Image (cartoon, rainbow, N blue to C red; front, side):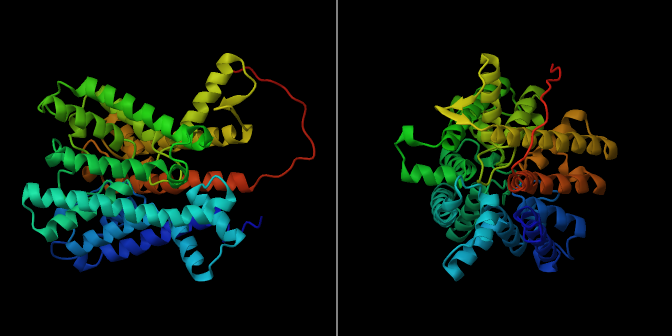
Length: 443
């Protein structure tokens, strides 16, 4: 494979950099700001990076600082970012040429992580169908509720419904409301559609495609789909139980709500913490134990080939099965009667090690240039590198150096694992010899 500028591992970060630059320029236009003058370069760059990388961290209040034009730019950026630069380019190539070349398929596979190379065209077509369908249904549900229950004019209801639907499906976490979704914390008809959109966007298109083709053929599901669904259920259920247990009587979060709203809030936050970035309660007012639960949920993230971030559920689950196989003394890692190749486990280890390294350096860098408490620095670093968007409320107070660190973390978090896995996968070659084996002491 030729390692030139067209190598997928290089095209992906270049595509995101180009979109971030375009978004920065557009957000610096005077028309993008609600007040007088234009946005400073750093503010525009931070917002553009956060939108393209579907993170949701902000240094300025979105509805107050940005004009309607600026909000449309932000929406376009996180729609494009979630859709995937390589996915969009491949779809255009498919529409124009009517076919996919090998190089284009490889580039698309790097972004969508399709399980089989031949499935890429089908997955890409599914991207459009699922995106349009989910966002349209979520928009309709939200707009109807906002109009009839809150008395919003149809224009306002449709705009807020559309913005939150697109933001939810792309796991972007941006909102047209200063308090995110806190004002709707007890409204299930608002929270549930957003939750469903977040879940569908975070599962990943290969999983959605397989569920579309074989919705009830459980035994025929691929290992990837089984791991994603099982891991999602464990994380959502376990996260909700822990968040509910720690925050149930906290008057600053769930304690002021009725039982049904507390349950809804715990469940929603368990979903949102895995990269959606929305919140219905004040994250900064949570107990430290709850914030630690958030660290784990944010770090693991959602499904591969979706709009979620983190190390991905399949990575986490594969390593869990590998540990279980080691505990049992088994030579093979087996999932659903399928043996997992050692190459996949090595890639999973590489992704986790890279994520931990980025997180460690990011946290240390934030502590070096700010006066943040350690737990706040850890929270911000995980939220940025896992492209989540939740914050304990310190993002807007960071100095320029701190904002620059978060910009780097968001970019690396969005394209880093994709680039790493693609580069490693495409560099594989057959060894003609093997060295003698020696086992070092482990543990």
